[in-house]
Length: 234
Figure 1 (cartoon, rainbow, N blue to C red):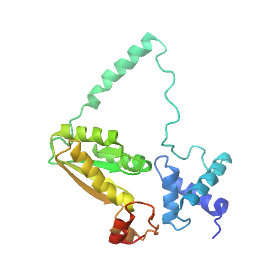
Figure 2: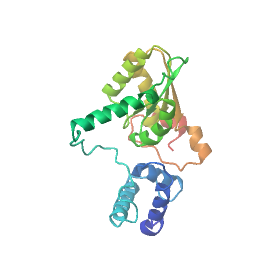
Figure 3: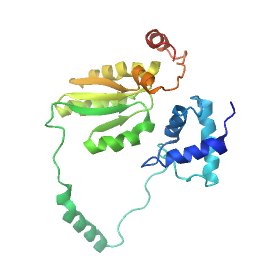
Figure 4: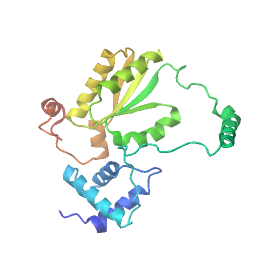
């Protein structure tokens, strides 16, 4: 099926962008289009979408800065105060506002503290926008988490001195299912003793309930056979 990128997809992309209260990533828009059955869930299609949106941004059909780029491409430049007086004024403003900043910890007096762990870095902004309202810490990875990120998280959890529930969001595929076991095993080995881990998305039941389009599991994934035995190859 030939995709009408300019006449159908780009207007839909523009509509979807307008539904967010923040700048989404291109990957988020891609998944929304897949869920709407407008495009297929394949990497070549994602690359075609990327090219089409570049053209649309160059032509100003959509906002050139519509998408968030989660890869840091620059660092902070020059900073400072125009004069000593400006510095003093800024410090005084902060002092006057300081009573409004006083708060008590929300979770340390609770029986359990939640944290959220994401497989997809692209989900960091939308999940954090909600989690921050409740002061829930969010960890984001790109696939399997690195030693450093898991070790540092384990030390953070150990210092909390209260039980922690890890709410994990991964793909529903061979690697995504295995990441649950992997993360719990490594957090425990690295010192996070009192933890419980639960995968809250994406699950087999959610795929069925929401009618999400299937995507064949990669047979090249070394965890494919175990996944296929439990769920089939979709």
